[in-house]
Image 1 (spheres, rainbow, N blue to C red):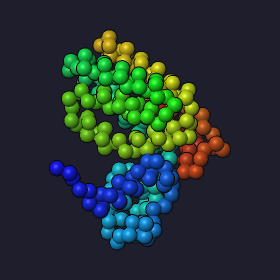
Image 2: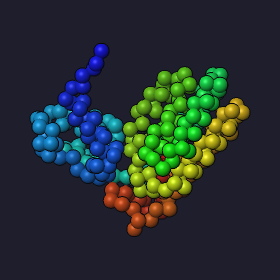
Image 3: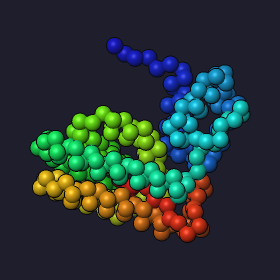
Image 4: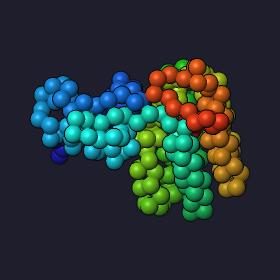
Length: 234
């Protein structure tokens, strides 16, 4: 059966995609009246869409006239990075402890191979994401998956923003090396080593973004004095 997407869902998905692809940038306003004109609807579905984007963590400062897309905040980025890293460490332990090594290994290898072959294309990001997703597919813990899903939208937004601003092959190559190290540890069944490589992988992105100076940073990028921003670079 084909599921029909209602109008509210279409508007929400369209705005979400605009934010993810940065057609609506960090810190930009979402004005109710402008969105009503764009979609040809009343205020109700617009407000519903904005409320859902707020629940996703994409917007803030909701008023009667609209809202504002979140700024790229240092502490927010670091918080998301830490949460996602912790979830990955647990997912690896659960997947290996529950005897799924033989199922997991070839899938991880497949996505690494695709990342390597597609490093100069946007398809790189698909296999990068699927590599990480595979670690959760075999953890047999729905609660862990649910927590990941709750943070996945904001996580994806930060990842895409990271690569848009620092789109260098050296960053992608380093991510692939990290993935290979994680894979090698999984092959050995060495949970502690796999978790350590996950930590290195996520920490590397923090170090990269910490090098961005205030003068170099694009609009919507917020820095805390004495601090450095970071999101996972996969």
